[in-house]
Amino acid sequence: MTRHHNPGSKPKTSYPRIHLMAAAACSAIMVLTLTLLPSPDATATKTVRLKPAFDKATSSPAQLADQVIADAQNADEPLLDDAGVAELAPQRHWLDEKVRSGDTLSHIFKRVGLGSRDVHEVMSGKGDVDQLKKIHPGQVMRFAIEDQKLVALEYVISRTDSLLIEQGEEGYQARMEIKELVPYTSYAEGTINSSLFLAAQKAGLSESMTMELASIFGWDVDFALDIRQGDSFRVIYQELHLDGEKVKDGDILGAQFTNQGQTFTAIRYETSDRGASYFTPEGDSMRKAFLRSPIDFARISSHFNLSRKHPVLHTIRAHKGTDYAASRGTPIKATGDGKVVFAGRKGGYGKVVIIQHGQAYKTLYAHMHNYARGIRSGTRVRQGQVIGYVGSTGLATGPHLHYEFYLNGAVRNPVTVKLPHAEPIAKQDKEAFLALAKQMEGQLSTYAAAMESEKVANLDQ
Ligand SMILES: [Zn+2]
Image: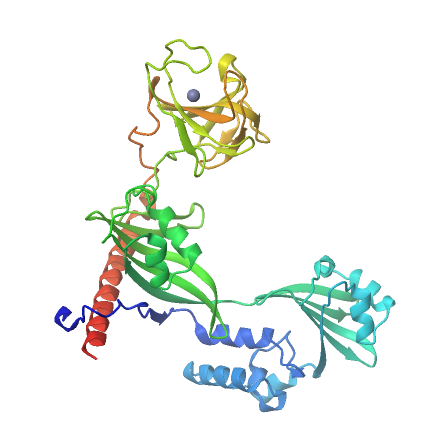
């Protein structure tokens, strides 16, 4: 296998990714898509029956129609009967108008032969007509005009969202139409030569997906310091498609990261009340109860040291925390969920916030320029919530954050203290989670094996 490898050749630059159609009800989504994407000149009514779109008389765009018809046949759905056709509203003739730079609604209405009276009537309609105040150049507005009267207006906000305004018995009525994206499950893997970002790019992952991957494993792996050549990752994730094209990334469903020979596995689990989180296959949280640092990307300017000479007082005075150099105004985050027990001035600390986390833990943030809105004694805060901004109040040589960490009343080095895990999977979810985790781990192995045989096949060519 590797014998076929030519030492002079460059390594393969991109690995094919494996796409799988998700188990979603594709035909239903395709049908919906068609009804929300009217053809340039004619379309079936967008309000009632979806099926009439298949009827040749309504002449939808060919490729869309083909797709839908194929889909409908696959899904074994009967085509429309006469009764269904009878429900169709009269065909509308749509005029497309692109928003130009400097346009107001009146300008656009004028271009399609409508007057300021029509603008006024539309803007006093029911529903979210105010969306029309947010038009910007390049967007498309579609007008259905009958007998010089506006019967419907579609404002295409984005690839997925549009506002449909229709004339009813009591004036215009607006409603949002959101197209459903079709989720595809994908797999990517890579081995790191220099950086995670390069390896991920080579594997076809987007930058945001790579950030997400790093944040899932960031509790166990320091991506700035711990990464070694030969580290690797496998990830099963979703891509959201519209009309056969990727629109954006979905979620990472399961992933593995091997760092210096140690493999970490993360499985996504979502509940309606607690949202989505990543857990180990055993059900422990991937997150820790505390962030390692209250500031992103900050440099440590002074370490925890219980026998340090104080820079301002010039006496031996314990430095009971870690200093992070950062410019004035940099946001400071609560490192864990908890309750503010003090927010005010305290001697050399200047403006300080102290947070109690459960019974055992306490954190302290000093020299703040000011507090974040709503932060006062008694405020409940979430991990990562901004509680204030870097400053130099109290005894400080310049703007920085002084951060202290307490366990059962004893001060600890925040950089080296062993951080407890966040809450594990909830008891009532455990059984379902373990089954999902097992399935996801199986998929990771299956994909990896498929990828391996594909690589071997390529080498043999
Ligand atoms: Zn300090």
